[in-house]
Image (cartoon, rainbow over all chains, first blue to last red; front, top):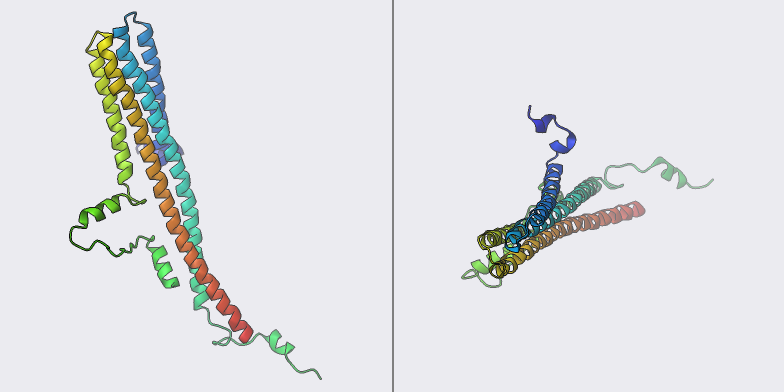
Length: 125
Length: 138
């Protein structure tokens, strides 16, 4: 039995796994920015600082922006999928209901008149 | 009509009705392919967006490699601006493309569901109207 199978619910759900991965990637971008700051702060020469700015700073911001942007898209699509599934159930039920209504015989087609209705139409003495 | 809707519901509504081709069969294949790619339900824009994101990260990597290989700020800054900041912008554009593609796909799917629901509701209305008429006439 793998960790995925015996782990908690959020690990078994691939959607939540993807969300956790994207969130972690965004955090990794922030860590990159922190490392860039540490690298830049530890150097006194600007030519030595610029590679940290590019790789850690710009790269970290890009990673965080991309990962958390994708996370927002992912969560939005997940919510939309739930909504579509609920609507699909309504569509199926409505189709089934329409089919049953159509296949039901009318009052004159094999069904006797209700007793209450026939009693009401009797002539008064 | 209900039978058609039931069959469509059971099959998940994957039935595709080919529109008539106004350009004719000869020489229209590339145009048709382009139109298929630009359809809201197409997955191609999503993959294009992911590729654009990857290109942006590659640009940032190139910028880092060039900047790290130089020791003169005057020579480093052009790489920072042209590849570094541009790479960041390209990454954001890629995310935007993915976002728009996802929204278009969801909207197309929702429109398809709404169309089916409207058809079924019209059918229900018709069936209920017929039933009322029968009851009144009987």
